[in-house]
Amino acid sequence: MAEGPLRIEVDGDLSIGDRVCFIGSVVPTEILVRAGAKVEIGQKCMFNYGTSIEAKDSVRIGNRCMFGSFVRVSDSSGQSSGPIVIEDDVWIGHGAVVEPGVRIGHGSVVGAGSVVTKDVPPKSMAMGNPARPMSLSLRVTEANG
Image (cartoon, rainbow, N blue to C red; front, side, top):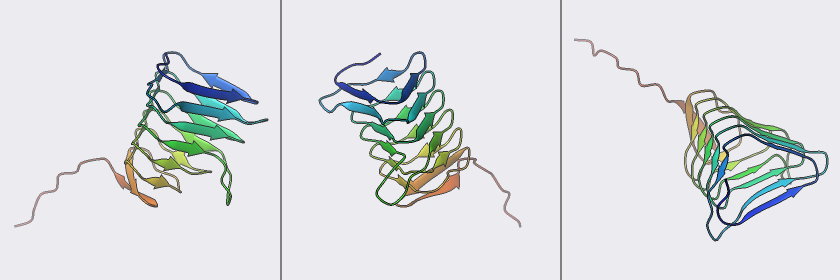
C-alpha cells in the first residue's frame, strides 16, 4: 500500500514482501536500486514519508520493520561501501542514518537522529552520533544490605 508520492528507480533487483506500507506526505519516499544492486524488503514493513533507501550493492530489510520519517539507508558513501542488513522487528526512528556495511540485529531500536556506523547487536537500542548500542533488557537487581 502506498499513499502520497513514492519514487522508485530500479536498475538492479528489487523485492518487496507482502503487506508493506509506504506512508505518504508532501515529501516522497524513495527506493533507488543502482545497476547490479539488490534491495530486499520483508513482509509487513512500514516506511514513513521521506525515507530514502539507496543501494549500489545490497540492502536487505527483514520482516516487520518500521522506519520513521526522513530515515536514510545507503550502502555507499564517499568514504566507504558495504552491504546493509536490517534484521526482523527493527524500529528506526525519525531522521536516523544507517551507514554502509552495518548490520542491525533483530528486535533492535535506533533512536531518532542517530547515525549508525557500526553493527547493532540483537535486542539493543542504538542512539547518538555515532550511535552506541545498549541492551533493551531490563534487569532488576537486589540491593545489598
